[in-house]
Length: 147
Image 1 (tube, rainbow, N blue to C red):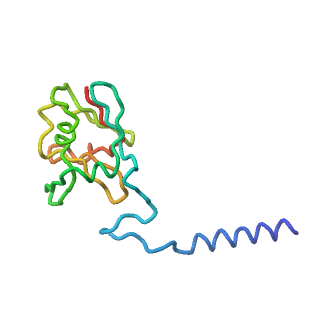
Image 2: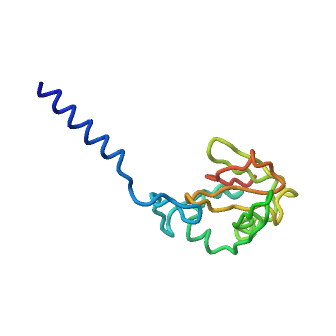
Image 3: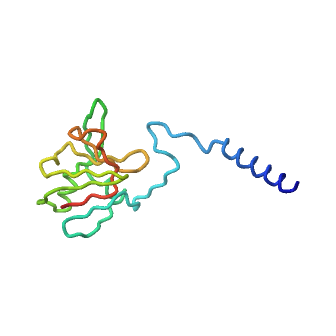
């Protein structure tokens, strides 16, 4: 009998906790409030030809010039992958492989232009987007490797 009461109380507590909203739900214009990001939060890793692993932080990403392009009628704002490569003094390479979320895409030097962006999502992840890459191949970025 005591076990039944304890289990009943636990179930009631769990159900009431699940039914109670935690803050206001995010709107399309505001980031998800459950994510807490500081300027020192690593968003992805950048690996140049030297093989060194450079952690790119939220603050560093915000320091780059932001550009806006239109893809399929929607505005996308972010930094140019080209600008990231220039800042890292990467001028000669065979490919840039962007990976994350179980996916990857390799881009040849002639595929990296002013329309290849790294965008910051409302959940503070970085996504590789471009009008020249099908949306089904866009990658949530965890690593950028220069080859």
